[in-house]
View 1 (cartoon, rainbow, N blue to C red):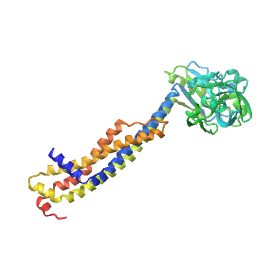
View 2 (tube, rainbow, N blue to C red):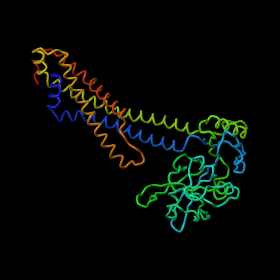
View 3 (cartoon, rainbow, N blue to C red):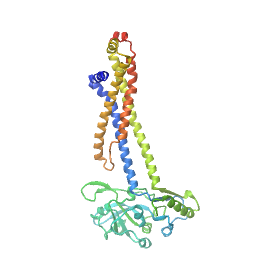
View 4 (cartoon, rainbow, N blue to C red):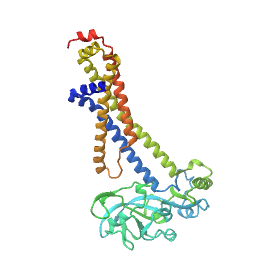
Length: 412
């Protein structure tokens, strides 16, 4: 206790110098906690979005159609297998939509009614796309909730008419406001997509929304120059607990269709996307943590530097203490405690500063949830303690081995 008291008195004797020494540790701890917390928040948000899309469907990309592309007429009857559920093609283009209310660009998707069943999306108003719409190339469209509000001023736009690049379409359905759409989930490789910044559905807060609509795939092939063959589509599993059987059945169908060439297509499951996302997130967290750890090491060097200065300044004090019976262990313990106090105090202030920064950042980064990672906080405390001990060890040893007679003769 006496050694601890003396160490505390020495640390608080020069408050400004102690604070500047702590600053390196404080910045390092703050950087570590804030960066990792933001990385975790972003990772959790992406994982949640992927999870919301479900895990019982597969995405297929055709890379080599063997000069015999899949057309919509073949696609409708192509996946007749008990292990498979719904199948839906997907194509995308960008059009200008206009109504008497407003005019703006929007992402237009060509698909079938099975897409909404695969994604688990529900229709809030009206109906889904029907097989007759596909067969008759009907000019009908299903809008997202925000898109209906943007173009018509209200969500229930069933029966309204919208012009898409000069083509008149009847709104037959509007999705619920929490529906998962391609603009917020997966990338479709047909054409570039644009987003539009507009007011939210309640007309009070400004936010960025993606304007999107869904039309029959057969209709899309008539109005879009870049859409004809089916090169990407989704297939769901009849049993969400047995994705392996569904994947095997889908692979068999595609292998037979493309001359047993496994390189002609790529099947991606949601579980694979989740695993890839987790791997990227873990790598990102390690990288951010490593960058922040460098700041902590720099702070440790600052502690060693100031402790060496302190040892030099207090050489006569060390000589007097040794002359009256202080042991090498006692001297060493005092200087190690001083380094440890500075390091842990810097860590404590860094944790408090991190909490404040995360609270402020949360106000601006509303799309992700920011919270302090308890595990990272404990790692920061342990790492700070280790740095204090490691970088305080040499100055403490240097003070402990001084000979009393040499120390007493020392003059500044």
